[in-house]
Image (cartoon, rainbow, N blue to C red; front, side, top):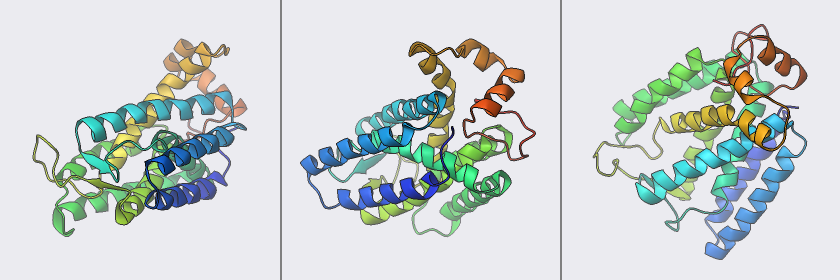
Length: 260
């Protein structure tokens, strides 16, 4: 099964509480929150299909690489204790499942339009009216819009964008993390949070959707990853009918599922 609709409310609520708790604890407290969040992710993926579980794992893996690169190495943003909290990797998996559930809870076309209009308006505002210039963020917005326009998984990406946007605004407002005023080494002004931050999440999701069949295959599953990636016809359609993966096109049920 794909992510239940209740995940669109339950998981973001957990994440909001998690970020609030983080502002009140020490490093040891973060470790406890990390163990708890891994447990929540495990419980969330337990009733799901093998492929969706693999997608969530893929998001965690790629997002962790992105977090280490963007925060610890490049310094584009910093968490409150200038570390990578243990709860952040599994939280990315919960964000993905929240976005998938949101894309199923509202009409796909409405989710996509809400994300596209919201991202575009945010990007323009960062260049015009927001008190902190957001050039770097605005650069990332067109990438997101391309995925929302062209990808058959646009509804999932749109749902993830809406969840990410809410959590980014919330997390930065309470001080869980803070984005640098300019990209280190480049000097390009960046928002707090930047409007294009969700484009990074899109890449996490794209890579996770691509690697998920291989993870299933490596774990002893019967899914043929090469056939999955090559095919855009009968195989994907039949899998979607038997085992939905939470990725639908904005044009409705007549479109075939896809991994990109």
